[in-house]
Image (cartoon, rainbow, N blue to C red; front, side, top):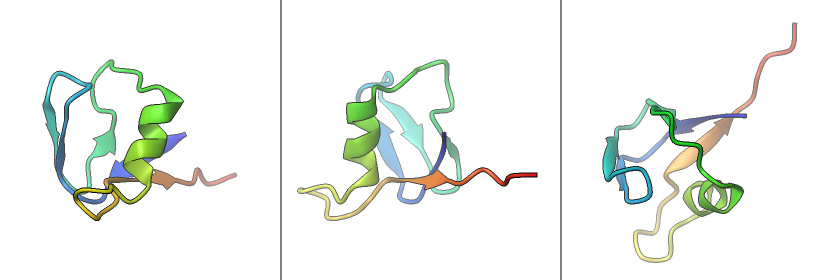
Length: 60
């Protein structure tokens, strides 16, 4: 599965790396656990926004 950043954020679980809207997530060798992907792809309680979105792969 691939993800794209839709709202900029600093990932505290990936060495405080800054992610800008439009970038792939993750962009380093970091392999986020499923729990982290779920946290970032749902509305954050404090910030009231979603940070990443799953990108559907095109089937050929």
